[in-house]
Image 1 (cartoon, chains in turn brown, blue):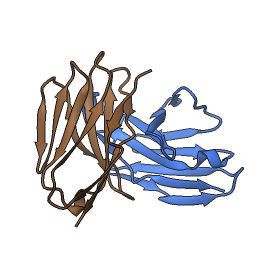
Image 2: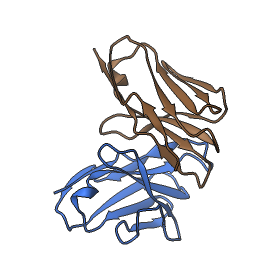
Image 3: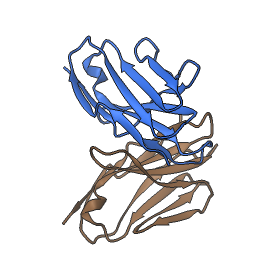
Image 4: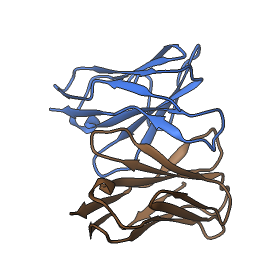
Length: 112
Length: 116
């Protein structure tokens, strides 16, 4: 059974703080690792799709790293803003029939 | 990219009734995916809807409970049949941006279902 774990489960930070959270996934049969942001009452929105060990990707104040050998990815948010408040989901793809295995998410609340 | 319109956004239903959720995509796509997120659980794939053939269901999900239609390459419906409180969840439809497992997924806005 493939398992994807995210930590912490929830996080409260002050505006301007930088933060990071973790996604752990199986280190065998790696194909891709996805990060999504899901705001309440909106569609989940893709942040990154990462495929290569050592990959680092950046979108504005958000960046992510990938270690496929040890099976983890970090998501970083620099200078958090209230609009960053959302649940951040990661999903692992082992390449079999394109199915994504999802973590429970990290719920981030940024206080103004 | 793909824009998906999902309806209804939320509903409160009586147990024993059925609800049909619709997803309309702004472009033609080969596969559409239906997910469920029960309270406190991760997103779980229910089935993959293919145009012109029967949907492929994941372990634990059956066609009688979750019938799916895929009449063309831009539209799909998921019905939650004979509902019980355990079916209270967020239901999401999804498509891939392009063929290939390394592309991002696009989602509808979700249907928040409460069964009473």
